[in-house]
Amino acid sequence: MSVKTYIPPTALVDLLLDAICVVDRDGQFVFVSAACQRIFGYTAEEMLGRRMIEMVHPEDRARTLQAANAIMSGTHQPSFENRYLRKDGSVAHILWSARWSEDDQVRIAVAHDISERKRNEAVQQALYAISEAAHSAGDLSGLFQQVHRIIAELLPVTHFSVVLHDEQADRLNVAYADSQSQPASDPLAGGAEKLCAEVIRDGRALLLSAEARSRRPQYLRGLDCNSLDWLGVPLGASGGTLGVMILQSDARQARYCERDRELLQFVSTQVATAIERQRMLMRLTFMAQHDPLTQLPNREMLHDRLQTALARARREQLHLALLFLDLDKFKQVNDSLGHAQGDLLLQQVALRVRQCLREVDTVARFGGDEFVVLLEDFHSPGHAAGVAAKIQQALGQPFDLQGHSRSVLTSIGIALYPLHADNAQTLLDQADLAMYLAKQDGGNRYQLSPSTEPPPPGAAKRLPDNL
Image 1: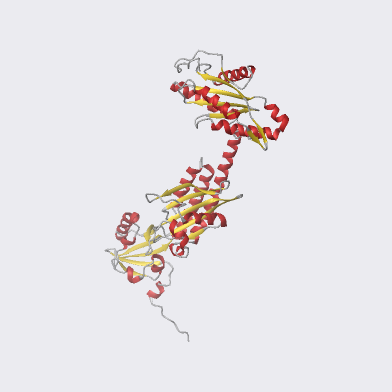
Image 2: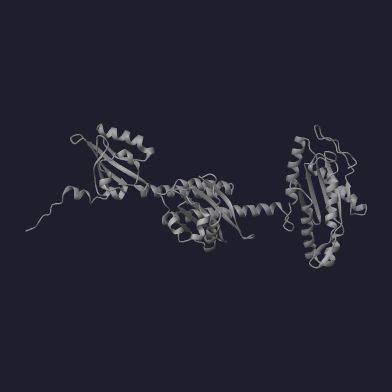
C-alpha cells in the first residue's frame, strides 16, 4: 500500500527559484516566497507590510506604478522589467509576470532575477565599446576619458586614474586622473605610489579593501580615507608592464570583487595595446621629422615650421629670421679623429646651439655639418645678430671628444623676413648665400644677406640695415 505525502502550498512555493510576491491594492506586500530573500536580500518578515514601490529603483518608480495601475485595471503583464534595490544597496534587474486577482483584491507576481544576464550584456557592450575606442582613439587622453566613462557605467567609480611607468627615468607619471571629489586626490600620494609600484613590479592586479588595508598599514596614509576599495590593474604589454589602471570606490554597499578584477584585467589589455600603438606612432612620427643623430628637427620639419611662422608673420606683421650655420673645417675632425668623434661633435654642437635659443625658436640639422635656426617673435633689430654671436661664443668653447679637446669655428648667414625675402625657399637661399659669403671672408663670422626684396603689401616694416 503506497503512502502519499501532502506538501502544503506555501512549502511548494518556497521550492521555486523565482520569487512569488503578492501585493494588495495599497501596494503593500502581503505574501512573499522564500526566494525573495535570495533575490532582494530581505527576509519575509522585513518585506511583509512594506510598500513595494519603496524597494524599486528611483528611476523606475514612475513606470512601475503605471504598470501596476494597468494590471489592477485587468491588463495582464507577462513580461515587465524594472530594477529593485537590494538590502545591500546593489541593483537587481527583475523580469516580472503579474496579474490582478479581482476576488482577492491583490496582485500576484512572479519575479525572475535577470541581473546576471543584464550584467553580462552590459559587460559585452562595454568591452566592445572599449575595443572600438582603443582602435580609434586619436590620443591617449581621449582614450582614458572614454574608458573611464564606460567603466563607470558598470562599476562604482569615485576615482579613476592611469599611471604610466617611465622606464628611462624609472619613475611613475600620472597620465590621467579624474575624481568625483574636490579637490581630487593625487593617485601617487604617499602609500598609493607603493601600491602602483607593487602592481607594476609583480604584473598582477591588486584589490585592496578597507579591511585588507588594516593589514597593510604602510599604505593607509596615501589612500583616501573615504575610499573603501582600491583596485589596481597592470597595463601589461609585450615589452613588460606599461603602468597601472586604478579604480577607487567609496560606495559602502557596492564593493569590488574578484569578478570585477577579472573584468578590469581584460580592459587593461585593450588599453595597454592602444598605449603601445600610440607610442609606436609617436616614435615613427618623430623618426620621420627628426635627425636620428642629433634628435633635432630635420629639413621637412623645419620647412613646415617655417611655413607656419611665415603665415603668422604675414598675418600679424611680425619679423622672423633664419640663421644658416656651417662648421668651419669640420672635415678635419673626421679625418684626424674619425667619424665616430665627428658624430659626437655634431651631437654636442646641437646641444649647445639649443641652449642658446628660446623655447619658441627652432634649430634643425639641415645636413652634414649644416644647421638652420628659425627665430620668431623678436622686436629688437639686433636680436638675430645677438643670437649669432652667442652661438659662435658657445661653440668656440672646447668640446671634450672622449679625451680629445676641440673648438669649433662657425660661419653664419642671416636672412630676415620681410627685408630679404617673403617666402620660405628664398629666405633659405638668402641665408645660405650670406653663410657662403661669411666663409669666403675667412669664416668664423656672421654675415647679413646682401640681397633685399621689396616687402609684400601689409608686411612689417623693414629692420634697419645696420643690424
